[in-house]
Length: 406
Image (cartoon, rainbow, N blue to C red; front, side, top):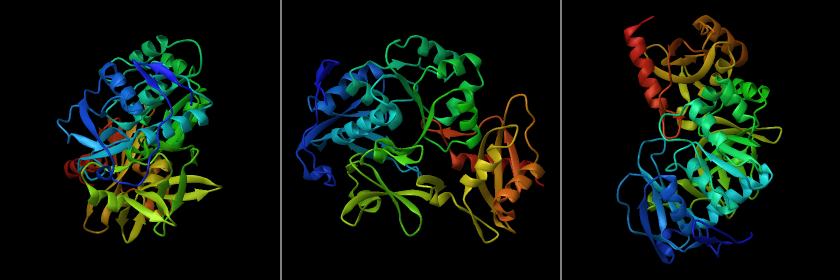
């Protein structure tokens, strides 16, 4: 990696790192909170990546313990699927490996547009990639995400070199509904799409519009996306355990959790002498491509049948009139859990009926997977940078069915 000077520090190749050791087992390095404003976080992050400054904890969450391991560059707070707060220790080595593998897959460094919050790993990685590329990211104006602000930010980007950005599906839905924003999306060499499952219909619409979408799979513990379009990035290994859970290994893995060795022992496992992250996601292989089926703890038990929401959502999302969908289970005296499709309609097209939803799912997946209720809403509840909040969607569905019993 070439040396480059940016944000007042020299960016150079990382030093040696011993993956798999907890932060307490290494030389101690100070950690400080930094507001998640790009103008403040960029120079602090650049210094952290070289070891010239302390590790950073982006965001307004309040004080964190003052010391971490010597190679830790960032501590990213995440609530995880359970809502339990935790700080994920991301080393400079792992962040660099992730950024280098991304640029390698996309065809080289370029100019990045920041459209995600930097206290989440996807937004933080836009800054890391920019630092290591020696470029300055263009930032979408703060406030609610709107097509107009996205278009204005794209117009301010440098004209030379490739352009990249990272979005979540909700953002892409809004941009594709606007002609000027769709045209702006076409100017990007790649649009990384992650943070939540992407409906096949959304991907098809984007690609039909000439947008170069790359789906990503990963989490904070892997420095963000580490599997692109179902194929692992360079250095990343993927395997499935006996339960079908996805295991991830490689130089992008986090060191562990801040002050939580109990979580380390549960999340990181040794398989054939290799350290893996044992995710909560179920997966399968199809022609050598990883297919993520959804979280193991999201699988519904309805009438004695296991119903993973992901495949049902894919079928419903492909129906005319569906912009977004979340499939959840609500308590039911007869079925244990009744499968419910919570749908956001597409402007200008009537939402499908329950009969149409059930017929499509039964035809593709079987009657046991077919939703027994349909809830049409203006928007799906989200958390973080745009990930659908299944707990809140379940509560929404439950309230709706209590008011509108069928």
